[in-house]
Length: 403
Image (tube, rainbow, N blue to C red; front, side, top):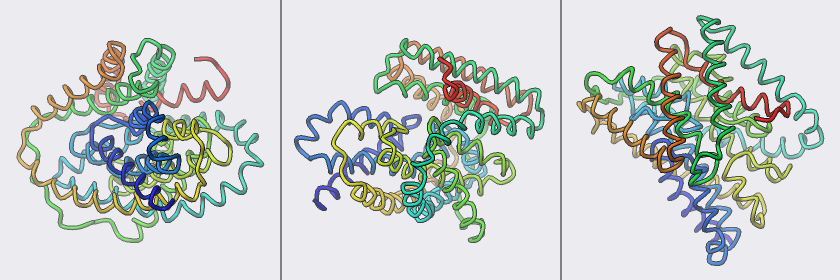
């Protein structure tokens, strides 16, 4: 049994590395591929190894997705807001530090989240109906705070609503998409346009500065503090229905502006992303609810004991932490590269992925999202207002309003 779990974990690390290092690709995409081949895999590996592979892939992805976000400026659903300060540090020649901070935040969150898994698993199912009832109200409050405390509430409200309408349009007409690896694929062009291509178009000048790593400049106490904050935020949204890592990142942005606290924000959001994966697993076992595509893939098979998958997640986190640190050292090889052709190549790659994953519908969403994503830079407001693309549909769904 242990051998099957470890073998599945190694397979998951490999698959999560592929999804994490390809810009714009989410772990849900890899889960879709595994789900399509699940019949064959179950016959060869067994449910324990397949379950370990799925969860290890998700944990691996939460560590490695910071690399394309930092060096290429392209987010996935989990790094939509984290990409902004991480890429900004890269443009200052501190890309390796950004990646190492993210890896530390994710690793420390694993230590914090394991006790939370036990606490949530034992205590929260009995009050889940009350929790479900309040989701929409909580999100309205979060959205209100994001708007009120922005530099220009009027513009932030407008951007929030317009991006929200774009999100509603995208999710309502998902059936027009090719959905190559599941309906979650439409998030790729939506978020890549809002938070990726729009940023690249606004900053595609000059050359990539020399990448140097003199050391982590964030103090140990601040590192531990923001890892704890991020892990708790990720744990909460990992348990609550309808919420995602992107929601946790938006909440974290209320307490720390990523323009002024870039390093703290990277640590907190990375911790939130990894913690979200573990609490999503707990929600699957305790409530039989799926929080992402990986959990949906797990739910259609015989579930192995949760402790087996937690072991797989721990092993994956330990291995991939080292891998992330190792890969961060390659930052120096991008020094002196002209940003404009690099940005053009990345935009071309994202366009191709949008077409492959979603077809012509994905290209249309990508173009509309890019247009909306350019507005915050023009009117000088924080790009977090574009989170309306995710938050407004979730708010309406929480009140059972059909979208």
